Image 1 (tube, rainbow, N blue to C red):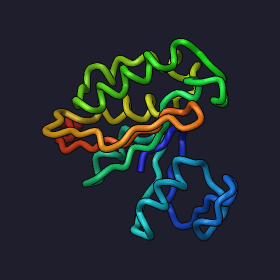
Image 2: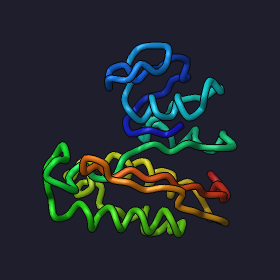
Image 3: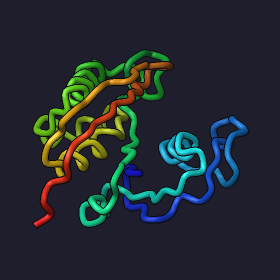
Length: 162
């Protein structure tokens, strides 16, 4: 699974206890890692951060790329309202839905981070390592409490690492 940062470790234990839910068996971990652990339901997984992924990600047959959209869509959001949030989220959402690698590669990650979005760095990393998306679909999207969450699925081919 791919998450923001420089993590490089097997996913062996996780929990959502730090977030107020008694789910999982292990210490509290970052939200993206905990949700991935829950979704994988005990299947073996390795957690790679975007800063270490480039030389290792292509060894895997499947990747769960975890990250959130903005956290500034409403006045109840953690960062409160930022007028850039919805526009930036829509750009990412459309690119993920279409499998638009070029748009994802060219995201302004500093601007995305300014509205609390952790996903764009993850999605941009995947986009640089994928040669072609053969099929893409947006499975879900919601913005409870002003934070954008989405689920998309791609089938594609890794770029030649050479």
